[in-house]
Amino acid sequence: MTSAAALRTTPLNSVHRALGAKMVDFGGWDMPVQYSGIIEEHNAVRRSVGLFDVSHMGEIEIRGPEAGAFTDFVTTNHARKLKLGQAHYSALLYDHGGAVDDILVHKVAEDHFFLCVNASNQDKDYGHIRAHNRFDCQVDFASERYAQLAIQGPKALATLQKLTAVDLAPIRYYWFTDDEVAGSPARIARTGYTGEDGFEIYIPPGEAERIWKQVMEAGAEFGIKPAGLGARNTLRLEAGMALYGHELDASISPLEAGLDWIVKFDKGDFVGRDALLQQRESGLKRKLVGFNMSGRSIGRDGYEVWLDGSAAGWVTSGSPSPTLNRNIGMCYLPAPRAVPNQTIQVMIRNQPVDAVTAPTPFYKRAK
Amino acid sequence: MYPANFRYTKEHEWVAVESGVGTIGITDHAQQELGDVVYVELPKPGDRVEQGKTFGSVESVKAVSDIFAPISGEVVEINESLKDAPEKVNQDPHGGAWLIKVRLSDPAQLEKLLSATDYEAYAGAEK
Image (tube, rainbow over all chains, first blue to last red; front, top):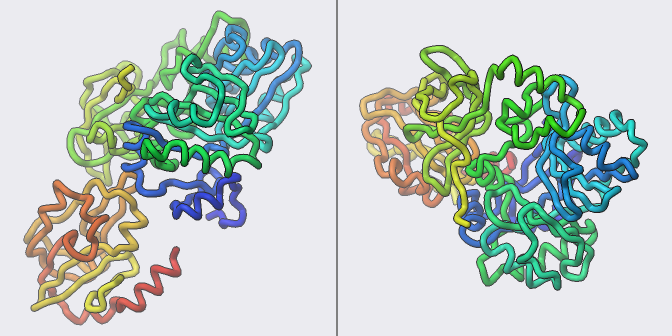
């Protein structure tokens, strides 16, 4: 077990502690898993607005005349197709096709791409990107320069709008703008990991505490709640979004994880392309699929999944769904069976418990 | 916080004995650690539980936790109301959210359990 002293902290650590958050070791970071309770925080995001400290996420910047070409070479999505001020979901792959990380790529300028990466992968990502830099780009590890807040929910826009002069409504989903929040420079992106409308803002760490408090005040009339990693997980699972280390890891390719839509084979060469082409040609052995538990039991991360009386896969994420009031999850199964409406058994403490595979996302917000 | 007439385990269960029947639940500390309870799995009346052995589980959004019997005996009643309202475990862990009632087979086992004062110190130190 890691001692608390060795854990990394965000600039908001003392704020979380003052709020009475339950803190956990999340991939080496001392992070709030919940404040008032996961269900209450989850519901606040679905119904109104919640505020997350996601400053543990890493930032990496790629600059240079060949920044677009390099970003395209080292990621799976088509970075050169991004417009200025646009972002997309993407992945970094090993040559063998397994995932180094799943990331967001923002195009700041023709010669400048801004990557938001998973906290516990950031050092690995930085090394991986630099190791493939045949494009003479400048690659900066920028995590120390940014704190990040996620304001999520149907009242996220109304909350954040009080703190910025920029008109937020015209910012489309997965677009961003560089402006100010509460008088501080901020990258304001209409992105999120909850399945709701919302914004992720990148701000100077020294301003994080002040801006956190101002967002809480701005959202007070909507009943804003600070939300922890527990609610973040149930929200993203309902929305069918992958979590690195669960749906995706070094031994799993984005094709297996159902992320074909972020793999652009026609853009030219990229790291991992050959391996993925081979997977596609020879056929995937396994694929990710959602499931609903048939009863009250919860199929949790790592539990075995059985098909026709023998072990066939494993649960990558499983949880009660506060919005749908049933127990949901995602699992890997042999590809031909990784389709909806298959009866499976999840081994829960050595007991096979029925579940039925289902399409994802489990939850989609009304637009 | 912790009723003085209860006895406690280091696994965070409590037992209150009256007329040879022990009422068993999980402690306030346990429910706080678990967070929102969404499912409680209990044995059936007539089943036997054994001191120190698991007899059921409490699931929260985040985790599943075994429950260990503080004393041995036969289950005479289970708290049916938790089936539809598992969140009661968070709201009233030392009262309305008791889990099972057991007819004690060996009352001397109670001596191995912690007093309220000792348990409070133990739970406080664990935090």
